[in-house]
Image (tube, rainbow, N blue to C red):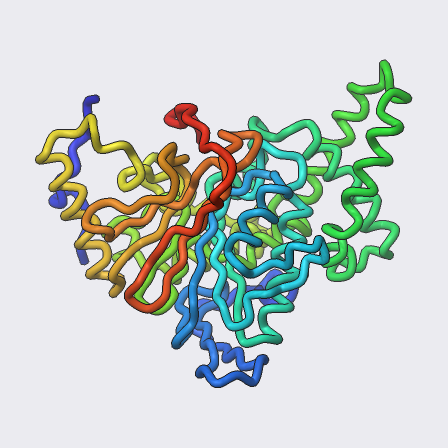
Length: 389
């Protein structure tokens, strides 16, 4: 396969509350010490979170979920952070959970997954743990209004959720936190009445598109929710992002990138027709959320290409002060794996039924030791994943 030039010479080397539209450029630190445990508190810097100090914590990384609530629960149970009795209780104690983005598209339970993660985030704090998400390309695509990969059931979920939000008196926190618990009953009721739509299915779809636009447009309530999350997150000496971080991203400034994406999603400059879409983070093949440089199969690459990629990765990690990077974005048909002297870990296994319908796998990090946690049951799909975005 032909490969574009990867010369380092071409690369520069050098939320608030849910409804707040303000972000801060100055670094901020928040200490989490809710569990009263023996470990030092977690310290979070940046808004959205960018730098996290989590002394002595076990870290687990979960890849792309794409609207599949059952697989999401399976992955979280496998990671040891979610109860297996259906009560959605945090069981991770002081664990730090990082989800690598792409919760949206290809499945019908997107808001339910976001709701579940918010609930776990609240519970984890009480035990001295934490839950973080990074936004992926499908989150940024939807805020841009690109609905090409939206499942029909996801449009329905948006319509249902807006009605539920109205039933909750437009109390976002109450509606959002409880949606995961009630979404299944709404889905069942919708399925029972599905035949009643008949020739009105087009109207039903239009209603779903409008609902999604209301929720996810910059400044919309769900876009504000996504704006709470970073594009790049550094936990101790590990860096997490959806596609991949390059030297010029780090030189530009990862906290600056996070702030710019958050401001765009919250539409903080709405009087000036909104904030500009942050190109370096969300647009182009080498943007943070789209980059596949570290995730591609290396069997078709020449040795000098591999050496170039290794050099780019090493330079990036050195500049950001990390020993390894964890990415999602590109489904790995062999499961969670590492490359380039294990400086990069790829954790997207295509688990969603809308992608490869593979068994969940997660990455566990304990100090200098890493391991892949996978189920002993279920055969792993051998479908090719190269064309998925």
